[in-house]
Structures are given as C-alpha cells and as structure tokens.
Length: 373
Ligand code: UD1
Image 1: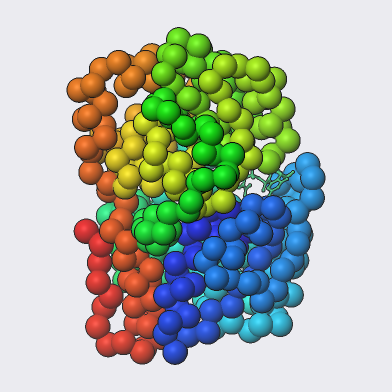
Image 2: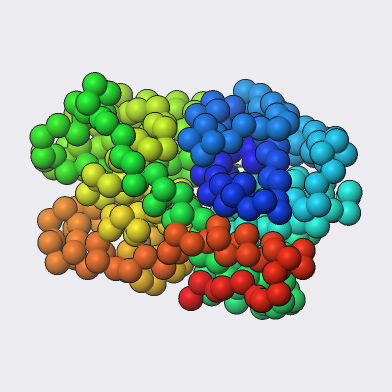
C-alpha cells in the first residue's frame, strides 16, 4: 500500500486475514504518501513489515513508478509471498502488480473493474486499474457492474468475485467508535447549527484552473448562504494547497484544514449536510451515511451512486457547482431524495468475502465464496 485510500480499504482485509490462522498477511508500504500513510496505518493495527519510503516532494509519475517498482521487486524477493494483494488504482497498485508478475507471484486486485473508458479521466488512475486488471489473477469486484466491465473485456468469469467495497467495512468499523471532538479544532467549526459542506479535491486532471473554479464556487456558496460552514480538508499536494489558499484565504465561513485522521473525517461526514468532492472513496462512503454528494468531475468510474440518486456529477464549472449546491440548500424535497437514495457500494462484509475467495483459491475451502448482490 502506498496512499491513504489504500490503507483505509485494505485495513479491514488485513484484519480479516490476521484472524484466520491459515494466512500470514505482510504489509509492504511504498509510502508514496508519507504523512497520510503514517496517519492511517495505526488506526487499522498495521505496521509495515517493509517500508520503501519512496515519497519525494514534487515527484513525477515516472519517478514514483521507478522507485516503487525497484523497491517492490526487492521486497518480494525478501518476503517471498504466495500471493500479492493490491487495492485500487494508484501508481503503487500498478507497480505492485507488475513486480509480482515479473516474479511470477499471483496477484489479487481489490476494487477491480472500475472504468470510465477515458484513459485521461481520472489520470493516471483509469489506465493504472486497466493495466492492473491485465496482470491480476483474482479480481475482487466491488459491485455487479464492475464485474460486468471485466467480463466485457474478456476476463475469465471464474477469476471474478463480487464482494462489495471494503471501504464500507472500514466505515462501519470506524463509525462504531466515534472520537470525542471536545478540545479539538473541529469542535469550534461544528459548534452551532450551521449546515456543513465538506470538501475534498485532489485529482490530477483538476489541478490548476479547474480546481481554481471549484474554489471560486465554494467561496460564492459561503458568501450567499449565511447558515453554511464550508470545511475543506486540503490534500498535502503543494499544487492543491497553493490554489486553495489563493482563492479561499480570508473567505468568511470557509475553513481550510489539514486532512484529519480517518475517524475525525468520518465524524465530519456523519455531521455534514453536503459533500463536494472529486474523491472516489468519499463517493462510496457518503451514501452509506445518507450524505448527498456533488462530484466535481466530468466522468465517474462509480456510476452506481449517480444511478441510485445519491450523487450528482457536476464537473468543475463554477456556475454549475453553485446551482447544484444552492438547490440542495433551498429545496427540501430534492435534498431528501438524494439523502434517502440507497448505498450501492457494499454491506460491510467485503473483507470476509475476499478472505473466503482466497481460501477457495488456495484449496482451503471447497465451496465458492458468498457474493455481494
Ligand atoms: C495519489 C494517487 C491517487 C489517489 C490519491 C489519494 C497516483 C498517481 N495518485 O494521488 O490515485 O487518489 O493519492 O490521496 O498514484 N504529498 C505529501 N504528503 C503526503 C502525500 C502527498 O507531501 O502524505 C505531496 C507530495 O509532495 C507529492 C504530492 O503530494 O509529490 C502528490 O502525491 P502523489 O502520491 O504523487 O499523488 P496524489 O495526487 O497524492
């Protein structure tokens, strides 16, 4: 694992495998993200068995890829795993699968089969997950739609397992033990009954002008609605931080905060009125918490939430973002419809199904794993 979402989504799988005596899960951290990885690992009881520590300021995609690939090749030679699990679509995932393929180690891909069919959106994630799919032996599709995407590409059906998304397992684990907000900087922000709009934004295809436009829309929403509090958890990427501060510094009712630990972020989502985000994970988590989401992207590999009515794709045009948010702030019926839309991403049992599929793969279990429908 290399980034924050990989830790969140593999944490419950690690826990599930640890509880089964037939498995010995080992954690290799590329640490493509340094601070955000260190922030998340302890929450799921994980300590890396090997830490490649590859992150550098201003790293290019090629540099991340080279350092991760070389480090993982060595890691596998040292640890000699029987199988490698990767999750999602980051550069760590692609290199994790490629290094395993070179060493002829089987690969399981968690959250397989997401597609926008546009190789530049999200960039580079769409191509990372397609390439990982080519290299993987076991495909853990979160939803039936993801399975259909894989089947349409000719992936063998017996190698695909529909499990639900492990992010819902993580969310349920964490939400069961809400942290105390008293004495934290969040307490002051959440005081009173202002409606909280929770924001995250970090996608590479949105860096620069698109992100500036999103920030302008946020500024106007906060200006026009006196009972709103915008809370924007800013990704540490310097290119994200610069634009957010440029447009939003000094704006009333807009708080720019560092990315909170996951349990605090979950608490924020639970309390929020609306989420505005380009994150994949938040699109999955929000419907499970009855939180309407506006997705600031032109495409989404997660159409299930849009189809169910829990999410709306609004792109990065400031007018469009503003009007979609204003509608949800003023039209109770429209808001309720989004809030009550079902969560199509999982039921909290995905890790158990993945563990069952691995037992099945290794001949430790005669019957097929259960499926998420
Ligand atoms: C990465 C993944 C993306 C995932 C996202 C989740 C790639 C190419 N991108 O995007 O798929 O959705 O993580 O957050 O795999 N930085 C820090 N501290 C940190 C993390 C990042 O300072 O803890 C800075 C570094 O300067 C780094 C920059 O952020 O150069 C970008 O990080 P990088 O991992 O290259 O890509 P992300 O945009 O974070």
